[in-house]
Image (cartoon, rainbow over all chains, first blue to last red; front, side, top):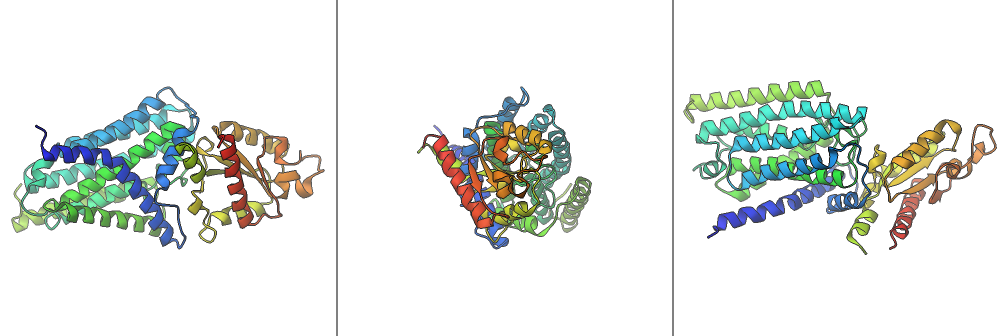
Length: 289
Length: 143
């Protein structure tokens, strides 16, 4: 007998890429409004991906197609792990595997732009991975579990206990969505940073696959943000969407920083916020180490 | 209409190449992309990567210096693609027509689908040209 929860998780898994695409469309619309223009239709990301799918591909290295599929697959797997109540740490590591795929794709082609993009993507990983692990750790300190299922059934909302970890998730979202000030490896929405960064050598269906993978990763980070108000999923997603809005606002308000600054800022902010948060928890008796 | 064809008409990513123009038309192309004219409402995005482009927008007269780069960009852009020649120079060579270091219009080097006249071409005309290019794209698709 399949439980209601399993069915719900399966439906959510199938819906994840569509939700991600829609969020990207809304993002482009909001960005356009912030720049006082009309902006493309909300379904624009779907048109883009369909078009890319229909274009004749230029395969510049033999690894490209399989790694593009790998990027999409591992992104999917990380969301699946989250939805079916897996381990927070394994989710972070699976998401990192997807990153490894895109870095390898960009470094396997003989193009300086692509190579530079891949190198910068590694620095993005270097910035986000420790923050994700620290966030997961701080959740563990409060709930005494890395398992999403147990975190979700924790009796009180996590946000009042872990505001620092929530902000850190926001920083991860900023880098993950390739938004200013941290859009160093490639810029979102077909804008340019050292031409196309990690996307330079991708075209046709490989680009479409990577784009869908990118949507799914965005959904993944937003889902992790929604865990911070686990007792009520609607409030959780409200918080996640508020975080997304802040990211879009930052994208339109800040210029791009160099990758050195990105690593320094994200580490300094991330470590400081998490450390302060955990220290406060221990002092006030909210948690024990 | 096929789903992919419909998506194609709604998402023209443009590759902008300056063959040796005076920069007048290039400024107008960028003006067409800025908030006032907002070509992005039609799905138009300026992209630097020929492998991901659908529409090649060329300004300036074809000449021996830039012909190789232009041909290379054309070959790197995967099918289906259309070429829009923006401005008098790109169409015929303009005021540089009979110079010995100028071939003439861009169509001396690569096949051109749409010519946008003007010196410099106005942003409205450029957007019109892009829409005409999309119609050509649809014809190429057999739609």
